[in-house]
Image 1 (cartoon, one colour):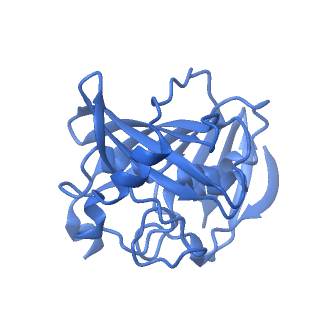
Image 2 (cartoon, helix red, strand yellow):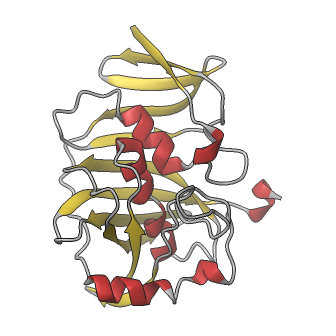
Length: 236
């Protein structure tokens, strides 16, 4: 077993109030994994704490972030071939923002990725609204003005569009697993397109996919997620 520098999720990068944004936290742990540019799978085992150093250890190809000896997140290389989500034009993505359900009702309004209470330059303010379906499956799109090109931020940009494609406004859910690959860095200062697709549901599990594209339509990153439906009482 090998130990590494601790992982800390700064309070700015929250998801639900009081815990880390799943995408940012997963991307931060994925940064420890030498995946040769390929996908990394991260499983969230409990809500990532904020401003709390977590011990990071590696054992047999799995990197684990621990709090008081208990696993919070674990990461490993993945052989999954990520298909991504077909993109839409920048014009379509801008128009979709006006249809963002979170503008009217949001389960986590301070979320770093999709929260409406975050100021420009502080949160990502990715507001996915409905666009045409893909193969009969619900699809959403939004724009994202990139102000940072760090890998965890790209993971955060890939995060919440999946939940909105799966109707998080109707059934509260949290990120359980995310597999992602970052192919290139976003262009800081330029507008990008984020798309999300609801693939299928299996009981309380909702499987989604997301893609971030740069202003020229090149794929910045793509991901697949497993969301776990939870009771609103968990956040009361």
